[in-house]
Length: 101
Image (cartoon, rainbow, N blue to C red; front, side):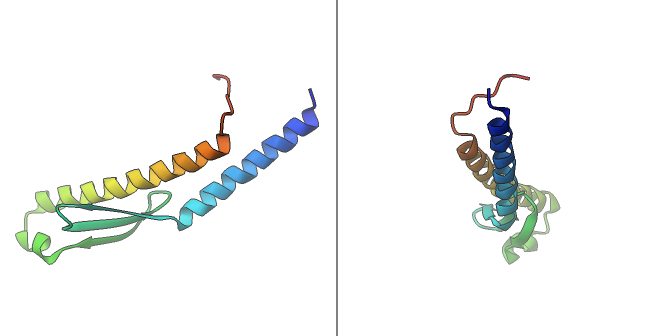
């Protein structure tokens, strides 16, 4: 087995994985809930970048309803970011079969 080649592959893999994580910082995904009453935008790491609430939702004054709609919009946006991250990592791994550790 050529350990030098294996080490180079591991270093390339690490570099590519780090690049994916860096790229995810610039990715923006969004989610909506409550028929568009709330819209959330997160980056590829799930950090909240924007949150917009419709005046109609706010005017209800129903804190529980507002919280539920906000959580649903955030969850949708974060799920989209997670799916994109997993898809990009999957492309990097390809058909690589790692042993169970």
